[in-house]
Length: 237
Image (cartoon, rainbow, N blue to C red; front, top):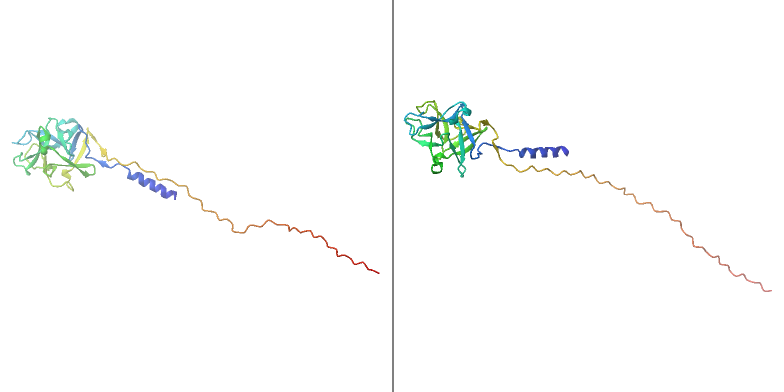
């Protein structure tokens, strides 16, 4: 009985453990996004020949701690999405047909000044499992590393072309916040564990002997009898 109670308490405690959640951000969080190659996404100045804007996004940074252009400041949009501000003050955004000759029409550029008027600068964070996330654009596609997809300064550029992040490693990113990796950046609140009430075992009822009580011996009282004398006859002579 005690063994079963102990197992129940252990199961209750295990169910109260917090669940890892990477898509939890505070305004002002400074994060870096590490790709499946181990390199980080960063702002790249004049790295796309004849690009529509000067700053595009490439996956080329090896040490984000010493590379401000690979550090992104999070802004919560208030509708469940986030915006990512670069060191330049502008925001990471989907840009359609902004990179001539690219393998896909949408590339990531850093050019939006005001995310509130630009849905293409707002990203929905999705849990990808194993401590990774995916970032979904307003188009429904995901931010992903793309190798040799555009003529540029580095082989891996950031494009918005992945239709899913499931089983797609190049569309999954590991978040490092303020230069540190944490597999439990934020936690889902859980209810306080309940302690099972312990009851003392009830002793088995004892059976009383069913033998009849022994009567107390009584001494019979004899009623005294008064002898009766018959009158004697007197002889008359």
